[in-house]
Image (tube, rainbow, N blue to C red):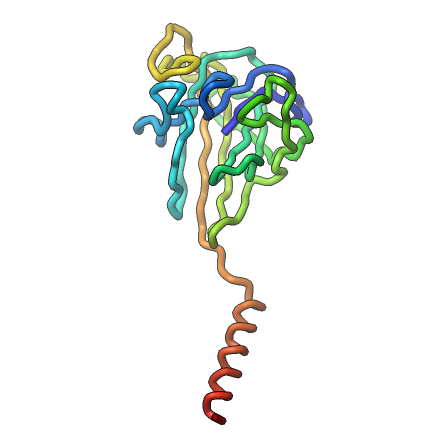
Length: 203
């Protein structure tokens, strides 16, 4: 995952990149729900998460050391070791705890997990959902909030634990649903099965 400041069109704004790979930018720390265990960390070396998604809805809260406030923030989600994002979104920075908005991000210049600060970018996925292994994964919520919104200090730049500065706090919800096979495919399978049965009868 990367989280980064963006312009109003979704392109990187040359401010802030947090990620979940060790050894580069400051980290994003991922918590299950709003009070569950952290799913990566506690150090930079263990920043890369391994999260198995189950059918249904899963919510996560994100924490990072504060950077430069910016009107908009984006997120790229990478799955199964992919080097390109499968889901990309962005929205206004949250300044109050309440309603918020976000949209799919298909901008040309969004942040990769490694080397982004040196000018390595990737186009946003342009979608809030993707299909893999017979399931559709959809981002149904995303926000990124100023320090004052939640007033929490749980993490630092490269490790879990309070560091004396209030965190940026974000969150996301992912929905996972089984994808039924297209009717045309089912019809073809049934037709082939019928043909095989007829052939066996004739034989």
